[in-house]
Amino acid sequence: MKCVNTLFGSVAIGLFTLIMCVMWSHVAVAAFSLPGLPRLPGPGGPSVEGGSSGSRAASGSGGGDINRRNFKQAVTITHPTSNFRYTMPAGWRIVIQDKASDDVANVPARLPVFHKDIETAKARCIFNITVEPMVKSFPRASAVAAGLKKDKERIEIKQVVETKRRDQGDPKKKCHFVGWYTEEAQRPDPTYNRSIFYQGYDQDNVLHVFGATCEDPQFQACRSDFLKIMESIQFCVK
Picture (cartoon, one colour):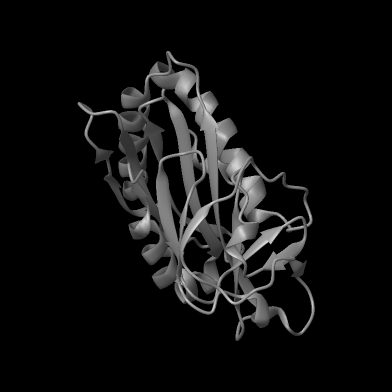
C-alpha cells in the first residue's frame, strides 16, 4: 500500500491526516486487491443513461470470453443515494464478488469497482468509488485546502504531475461539493500502482473518493480512459 507515501505530515492537520489515510487505505484495498474480496451491494440500484448488452446475471470474471462482459458502449451511471453521476467508457466492466458483468443493474451503490484489461500487456486498469459519511463537525474546507497543498508539494519531489482544486455546485444552494484532483507521476519502481484520484466532500460532509489506478508500465494505456471518467464526474445532478 502506498498510503505512507501520501500522508499529510503536518501536525496542524493531524486529525485530517489520520482520517484521510484510513479512508484512502480503504479505497486502495478495494482498488488494488483481487476482485475475490467480498463487496456488499448498497441499497437500491443506479439509474443509467446509455446501455449495455449484458444479461441480468453477472458471470464469472475468468475465462476466454471476458470481453463479452465489457461495456459495448459508454454508460452514464447516477448514484442511487449520493447526488452525482459518472460515465464509464466502452471496454470496461463491473466486478463484484469475483464476478464480472456488463449490466449496469449490477453496479452496487457501495464501493462500485470497474476493471479494464490491457490485452497486449496482460494487465488491468481499475476504477472505484468510495462514499463515506464523516462527522458533522469535520472541517471539509480545511481538509481540502490541506490535501491540495500537500499534493502541490509532492510536485516538487516528482510524485505528482498535476493537482488542482475542483469544486462543484453552489455553496449558497442545497447541493455543492468541494474537492481536488491529482494525477501521480511516474515512479522508479515499475510495480508502483500509479493513480489519478478526485476526492472531496459534499454539503453533508460525505467523503467521496474516485480512484483510478494501474501499474506504472501500463498506466499510459488507460490514462485516456481515466481522464474521461474523471472529467465525467458531475455533482448536483438530481
